[in-house]
Image (cartoon, rainbow, N blue to C red; front, side, top):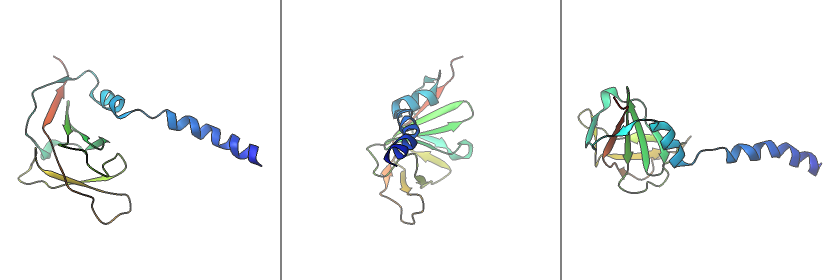
Length: 125
């Protein structure tokens, strides 16, 4: 019985090691794009859903531009499996705005964390 259980778990062990590190995932998202000068705000009207890379990095996409936001400090509970709650004022998402997280199935948001600058990455011309 023990042998069968061990053999059944072996395929799962390989799946765990195939996950990209946050640095690899960010590099994959950015691709061939080139960093531009940081901006303080981006319009929320044209942004796709945010993608959480790690507890300090959030990626936003707008058409061909990728915006990488590194929070001012690590945000407890911020990971790819949480829901991001963003407090937006005036139709723009700006440096110093606050975000918090909500665990799957949870009802109480986590601590508030402050956004940093938005670094746009664009395809070279």
